[in-house]
Image (cartoon, helix red, strand yellow):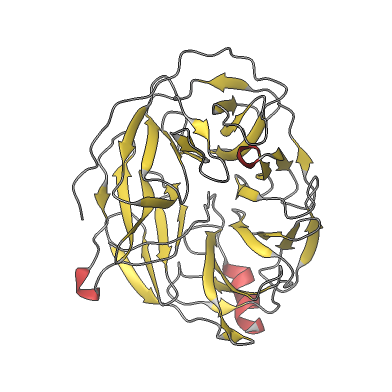
Length: 387
């Protein structure tokens, strides 16, 4: 194993990638019907000092959008706001948002609600309520207008590639993968190579044009969104009788891909193993060292670049942690997540460059104070962003 990793360190290529951790999927349907739009009136450009983020999506190290709200009061629905920056969080202004509210812990009684944001570029963006709804609010005009559409099931996760947006939709009989070209509301079920049977998966990730959709048995991948290949994957086995399941996929570039496997045993204890592929997922090798086993997995991200710094965000009963490897899993270091304690939620971990990344801690929708954390040294240190 060590020989494979050391050889790969010398040949792994470099490229940028935005990786999104998610859940669940399978594979052709008609475009989803458009519904009436909910468009909010133009808002002040000023972002309130009381703004708290619930999720974030960056399309570069400079430009990104934070979903959140101001004047958050526990137990009360808060109107969703979108804060946008073009200078890595130094300055923020409000983007026009649809008339939706931040999702509450109990689902609340006031629809519609959202808790996730995805932007592919400065024009195309989506809001949705992960695990709770099949409704999506979409803009193709950088927030100037929004439209509500429906997908045929509960949305587990969404991710945008260079030319399309993907959604994993939970349906009876298995989860399915849907996609739409950027700039269009033309959602269809991905139906690749049906001689293999339906596409099913539990994790979705993208890097440029490349897409990975994986389960505990198979990995579906495409380099262009049209031609798909299916490769077998192999679970690392069990941990004290608990089987390892695929918890995340992330990539440094279309060829160097990491797979996170986890076996949760309860009480904030999760055994983890990471497998690395140097051929886009066709084959994988287990890393030399396993990450520490304290905490519940919340997010997994690999920074773009030759060596691809890997980071696993975990929730603990105390201070949350990030397990970080800068050498393809030959060793791991533990980073304390500032501003957390007592099971703080973690969301939106991503790297926009080899050194710049972000992470949302807390959730105002459930009455938990929140911050957008920023790193400029590939995850070694993190600091809160001021709105």
